[in-house]
Image (cartoon, rainbow, N blue to C red; front, side, top):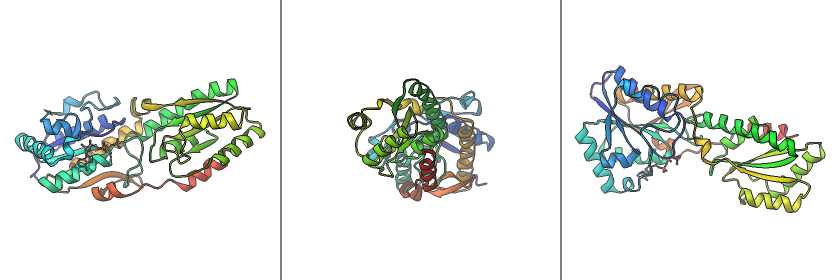
Length: 328
Ligand code: ATP
């Protein structure tokens, strides 16, 4: 392996996701394994601009694999989007002797990393961390599996009260632009309908489907709705619409919100984070730069950052069909 890289900086940026701590731990421990130094950068790019750094040895990441959130904190930095901000960040990195960077975050964070690499030549490697699973080049982002399990667990509880009172529940889950979380958790939780940003079910079809399910003997129903669903009405407007058009239903709304981002990461996310961290550091040591590590066909693979940023993740059409059949 190349010996040119002696000190790697690691940061978490954008929205936090379960598994980020496990990824930090993996980066720190892989550095220790290869006998190079590791520096934690606090509050994402904002901490880079302010020189908010801390040396991290193998023992500094004890007992964090099981923790949600990120011990390095995360931030969205407007200043990093300016040349002056990035120059300040570079000065701090040079002063600290950091000669490569691992960025754990979403596509915005990767865009920042790419621009920074183009301007200052610092090798960068991305690790995808977001519960939305909307990053090209990986079948799973860190935090997605945990969020799925959280949502399913909550919907199971909502179903108890829905069936006790013969109610219809609209459950809003995160996903402004991507319906992966809604579609998979909806199938896993046995939802009657799933509304996602990629597909326009239409109000008429929603009503038809609810009428059909009532006629088929279902006394309670769960409809999972992604924040960005295409119908164009928010979840409360949808409730009003159904109240007006199907008065026989007793409709309730539950917006799950930020709890979907929290909690201890699932075993899947911990293992994935560990594999991502090892691959990110070892790829930098091999002289690679401007890639994102990801999971493709169950293998850890590299995708150029540019493709990871620009590529679209497609919704699984087969899952849509499965969901339709399951609501029979
Ligand atoms: P999430 O998926 O949770 O939103 P993200 O990484 O996409 O995560 P963003 O807020 O889009 O989150 O980006 C995180 C940070 O990356 C920004 O606050 C900013 O500091 C940096 N960044 C994003 N876009 C750019 C850009 N065009 N130039 C420089 N820096 C950028």
